[in-house]
Length: 485
Length: 126
Ligand SMILES: Nc1ncnc2c1ncn2[C@@H]1O[C@H](COP(=O)(O)OP(=O)(O)O)[C@@H](O)[C@H]1O
Ligand SMILES: [Mg+2]
Image 1 (spheres, rainbow over the protein chains, first blue to last red):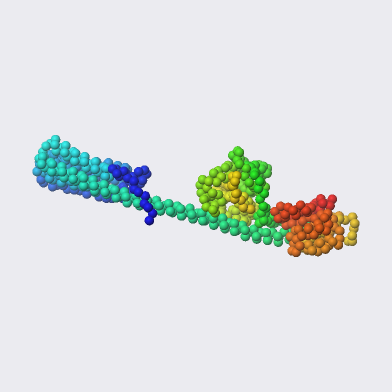
Image 2 (image 1 turned 90 degrees about the vertical axis):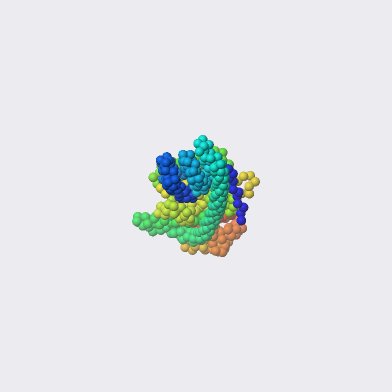
């Protein structure tokens, strides 16, 4: 059993420290709302009924007594009942109930003062009953209930002394019992509230612990899933890589024969016939296209080893945009570059990193046939939060606390539908097959980034745009590095 | 065809027989070259021993002796004989060792069309 946190209460007011008090109050209010209503109803009932007995014993003062009972105290109680259906009641509950209890008590005291001494026992008992209800049934908070109890007693004493219609011995006697009732009432009230708070506190603790455990479980689950996804991805890549290089080898030779064959035909037999020359040209173009796919397959199945040198990533990004300048202008795409100055050099293969950026920019370009905007940002960041591939475990690429360079390229293009987002870097996944897409752009891009020890994240909203984030490690001096070839 | 002394002699080695045939016809149609084709590295070495060539073009990846082995054997025999690799990779930085790359006179990637092949050959043979 885990050690329970100790309950911290103000010993007098019984309040919790901090936010917990608010939660408790809400909870306590809801829990006893029905009981409070029932208590008020019961109080109104008996306060009303006792007026009948009173009238039999003491018919002379009936008018004034009934006024107190039926025009003040009972309507007050019924008013509280009515008001209790509103949300606002929660805030005024204590004040109203205490006010009502005091009104009932003072009412009794007033009636007592007006009645002959022989009636004293009647009111005295009523007052005791009111104290009982105040301390227990109404679920008034200890501090309020005690205040009400002693206030009523004080009023009783003052009135008794002022009017002097109660014999001294009786007054002494009843004062003794009122004090006793107050003391016992306080003890009961205190213990009721204390245990209610203790129960609440323990439930709250358990709930809290449960939530924390659940949260931990969720984090662990996410991590496992993330790792699994990465494993599947790399297994997929490896399988495709082998397959691809096999296919590429087998296809390159036939393609060579076709190309040389076309050259032969072009020269020897067909040049005069325009249609046939046209067909040959088409075949040749088809070969070029097939060759392009095979080339990319090979790129990806036998990646070039990284030639890492300390380099400025911003420069690579700038160069990539420069290379695409004409196309971007032609497509009416505005480029905004926002690069932090003076970023540290990091170990990269400039050529391959350029390929990364160009692939991403090309995709953005394709996604904005009507023009649009590309925003590129590069900045450094100290990782403080656990996230996608970022964490504290050995399996995480980046440890919390390490520094990285973040390269973002955002476009305002078509975006990627939710169900496709997880597939875009899968080998051969393309939505642009008819426009010559190979579906290997992001596959290669991811592979290069990962071989640099980085990660790539893609976020997108269909119809709004896509943001690709490349996170690259900044290796500090003395670092072993974490780059895989 | 016979041996015409004005024509440069090229040895073409590739295990793809049809490709050999087509390259031979295409190159010879230019009238500047005489092309001998063989379909394995071993045969290529044998031919190179028997005859004098101005240039050897060899496939890089073949069953039996591969391009690199052919290169080693040829260079041992005739250090000044230019050799060109015919490879399936369009960029051979990754697949062919620098040490090997430095010893060949060129690397062309499959599929290469007639025009480009001719340019490469002309570059070397003048
Ligand atoms: N910036 C982008 N905006 C919208 N869709 C994109 C973007 N980048 C990638 N995609 C989607 O991902 C697919 C795969 O991209 P990629 O791997 O580069 O292959 P390709 O460009 O050849 O289709 C694209 O066909 C496209 O549907
Ligand atoms: Mg692409």
